[in-house]
Image (cartoon, rainbow, N blue to C red; front, side, top):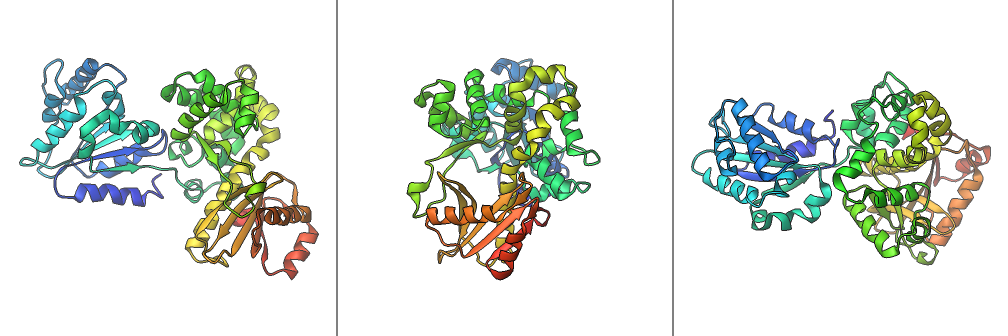
Length: 454
């Protein structure tokens, strides 16, 4: 579960080992693995855990006091935060870890919580040392609103630790029963969220897992995409309209304007909010001399499970609710599933190139990379070193064969981008045509890579 979290564990231990008391903010999206990381970290330490409720300040105090009562600590019926912190039991003389999960729920209803916490931390200097870990699933709030919300208390924070998605390589390790192709499909649906990986069983096919989770009314993931929007956003009807339009292929601001009927200014504001929550990303073309041939910037749904929902389910919700999962998959998911996966296959190829680059196993050691988004076609990956030598990569997942014409189109895009073609990698889940094989034999800079090798 926690493979790939060595850096995060190292940072947590760093704050724990520091002299004195600390306040650390740890945040990341839901299902990213925060709870598992915390559980592992505190397993051998004196610790206390509280999950904040969605309620008023008074109710929060009441519920926290009740929890302490169940743990054998008496407080008043509506204890102040100061009383609560002082009452938290300690089992040893060593440093104690106090975890407050979803702390933003308290901050949003209380002006006293953070000042009282800081006061408590200061009061412990002559008594005991504590590491307070404030956890949040609200990425946008932590990065853009937290500091103004907590005021001067922000100066007392020892650090921030963002928990990011795990890599495709970690997913492969998590699903030993799956082939590389099945892992690629699973990554396209679930992304790098280990909390979601738990929902899949590698003794079943990817199709069976999708039917069992995302298409089964009894599954926790059945309505997860809607909850994801409702928990963090207001005016979900506007966000739903924009996300649905992006999923249909309206990637540019003007396309969204024409499709939704909203003003460009309104769309830009809502897209900014979605980007802050890491639900949408804006993709800019790799900077080359051929700027005149690029698109200014396109929008894509960044969260995998949200993308799956708007790509396959949103426009077919009535059919999903009345069809069996297997029938719905056959009619609405299966026919275009390969096309959906192809975009994420490019992400996986980019991750693999980064790994090979770090290991020094490429013909160049690149220092910058990206995607070239052209008006006449795209280059999936451009990687360059400091001497401007280039490695270009084209990735095919959904076409039944990668052809010499695909290679020629890549060369055309390179000319439009005004970038050199020092090395070219072609990666495909299907076979390569004979002309490409012949070309690769006579050109040392051209490499054909089966998807299974990635």
